[in-house]
Length: 294
Length: 264
Image 1: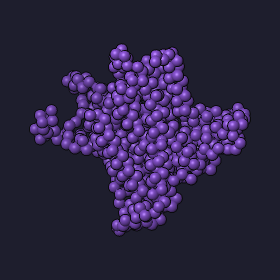
Image 2: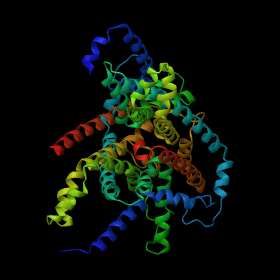
Image 3: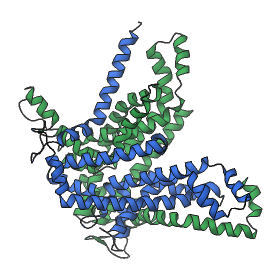
């Protein structure tokens, strides 16, 4: 197709179409270059600049920000906290989303559309709003604490907010719709006929699940876990609000350096490290997926 | 070893119901607490009143931020749809060198965490004096919304039967007329879905906005964030319910027009 079209591209009507093509491409490309490509290049450049309050100094290059990050034990703890948060959130979000996704993929209920909408609807409310919801549930005078106290199950208040537990629980729920969506689109290969065939050949339900449903849904599950993990390690609104300033992860530190301390090169360096972490996880995922497929 | 299938089914349905409850819990409690009027956060509500809603609608900060969010979201939606339409046309209807690179550039924002993008955009627009301004926040939201509009519009465009356009051309319609009278109406669902998604992303977005705006161009999510740093009273719950209702309304419109799963 493209080989046949190639000679035609030299003639003059094609030049007109090239002009049209340019007109079509330019606005969007300019927007994407300004709002995506340039910011990433700037970020990289800024991470090698020397720090001045709320601005970037001119031409000098220094690895000062990176050495700050690499030699300060605080940032190692921050990186560790971030990874722990990401793993916990990913594991629980996947475990809790799997039954819902499986249900939605297999149900023949006429409410299927409504139930799917209900499962992903939280995605369309601001994460700030849903974080507030978790403050109401987990707060010192929130749903859980007041219920426990009215049943006299606990003497005092159980601290469920202003710590990483609160941040983890809230993030699990906030990211579950992403996991459900990722699984739903990955569950295309699930096939009830295959399950029925296995059952007819004498496999019990546990065996059908472990030998057919689980292997066929594994790629979807892996994608969901990756998506939730990368979203969790780059989150900052929920850890900041649920952590009450006591949870230190990469996201909260980037925000702190960028808007409070105004050390922009350090914010840039932390962002670059987050990006490196992010990319390496995605590369690992691609290798895992390839291993699953073969 | 044969288990009771009815019991198994009941247990399975209960599990699904409980998981749904967990997923919707924050929205449910926000709804309940929004009818409380105390100055602090406590559960269950003491009274049932619309006092918090009244307070929200009298809160100048929230109201002005709401209008700003609405305007910013509308501009972002319009620009993202226009740019997305043009990009989709070039990708679906034209063959050119570097198409793969363009495709990658459009999909790449999906692969970069918002917080990283936020720092980058902040660094780019700060020297231009665009921090805390309408153009600044609109630009910041374009990069993350254009990939969505390209996606929905491309899908609509690929479903268009090009023979209809050819027929119109053969019968003497100018290319311009074919575009306005045939192509555009046929891809309308994709345009609307893309615009709505872009609007919602901009309207609900907090992470990038918090880096870009502070006072003059603050959006509703950033105002709520800053409010929550100091206070968690039911006013925020009432405001949240209003926002949730807006989102649900918009989602229902999208569902009606093209189906939710196609849009996302």
